[in-house]
Amino acid sequence: MIQGIGIDIIDLHRIKKLIKRNPRFITKVLASKERVYYHTLVSEKRKVEYVAGRFAAKEALGKALGTGLGKLCFTDIAVLNDDSGKPVLYFPGDHLYHAHVSISHSDTSAVANVVLDSY
Image (cartoon, rainbow, N blue to C red; front, side, top):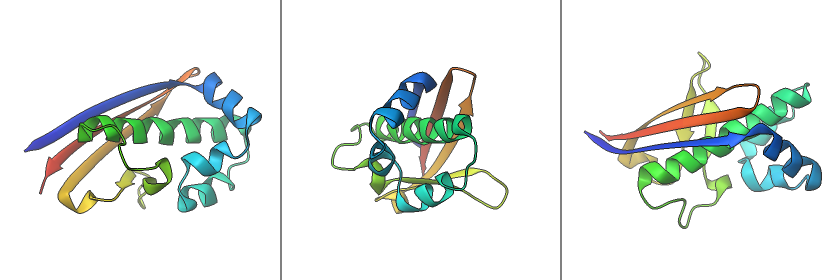
């Protein structure tokens, strides 16, 4: 049974400006395993897309939970890819839900959708 649905969209230019203005933005938004992958990316465009997609997914999770991020920090949540490349959400309380996440990018935006259902 579906417990929550969330969606978020973010402007890539906004994320690019935040990264340039404050390099610590990366450590505030990405969990440690996400940062490891981020640093393997070569292209600045791909790095911005990656951060924006993760940011949108975490915001969408807060909406799906119905509480916003509440007491969670962005770094409490990780969006990692499985062996096939599918994004998978890890967060405190993830044992309560089966989380489905989808992330997409255009030239100007990143969007993420999260659906939570019960086991």
